Length: 147
Image (cartoon, rainbow, N blue to C red; front, side):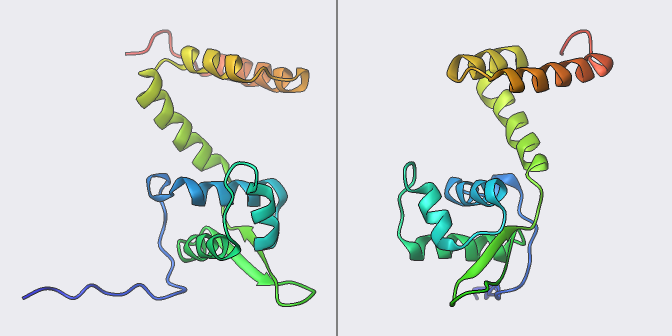
């Protein structure tokens, strides 16, 4: 006898790991992290150049992220539109995805990844200052060699 699968009801929150976040949902989250509370229409406009999609598709992605507990919504001041915002900070996800990429793509070689990143897009002077601060902070706790 087949077991019945328990249907997930809207509003039931599950913790989503980076592995369970498809790239389209990640693109929506990136828009929310960049601008804060925005409408689905604004997200669609932000993604138009690199991921064009219908308004309903954006709303579906937002609903999925809301069900995962990663997005919250509140009624906007004008009309029927809702304002969506990220429920979590981006840094833990950045760390997880970056660590995964270093391992999978660069075989654990951080220097190769940083070199590829600089080749792909040169940092600004302000970004170089931030990078230098991060390097200085990392030197304090750096290991001599990787195993």
